Image (cartoon, rainbow over all chains, first blue to last red; front, side, top):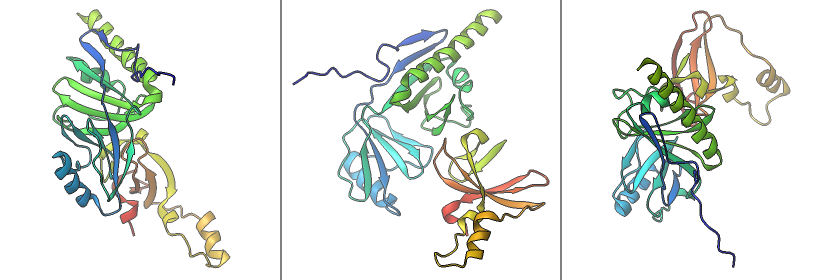
Amino acid sequence: MVNLIAQTACFGLLPKTIGTVSLTEVDAGPVTLIAPHKGQQKTVSAALKTAIGLGFPAPNRSVGTSPRVLWCGKEQALLIGAECPDLAEAACVDHSDAWAIVQINGADASAVLARLTPIDLRASEFKRGHTARTLINHMTGGITRLGAQSFEVMVMRSMAGTLVHDLTQAAENIAARAELSG
Amino acid sequence: MRLPCPICGDRDRREFYYQGHAGMLDRPARDADPQAWNNYLHFRENPAGETRDLWHHEAGCGAWIVVTRNTVTHEVSGSVLAEKST
């Protein structure tokens, strides 16, 4: 049998530090998309709560840290960092290795993301534990706030290279401007 | 331009795909007469005032929504999920 070597989505591209911002890839471990059947969200939420201690998140929210459940669309959520329990009332699809997830940390993290996404990233509007499905430059993806200067950006794995390129370019532009005015 | 998504709140227009008048939701019965189907497929109102449009929040939550807007003032006055619109 051929022994294949597993590579993460951003292998060879990250980590990077540009100006005040650092980009690091997140190895999410097992990821499962959970889509409760019509009208079954409460049942699924209760089953999840029993199995992993976390319920189904409200729209635009994430719950838990490790494992965690991240809302990712109408009546859909991603269970990240734990094997999916048996949920009879939901469609569960394995998304492990399907996402490229990049953490962006640093003083200018929100300034960098503001160049790429149309959503309001101010701390008063987009708080820790908030998540959004939105545009990241030309790609659809998700943005989650992890802390005051820390965000997580995710797109489908096939767009990992573009995501790193776009984040790098935005961060370089911000750093260049800071250098000019500094 | 921002559109109110019932799930995500106010979002940039770039996140949405425009489908057309919300009349597309009122599909005639399979055995409806050809005139009804003709009207459904080809005839659209062109109101000066309030109209309802179907938008898809494709770069967001993925919901189909019905947005009410005014063609005279360009005011967007609200939106509901297409599955809940009557």
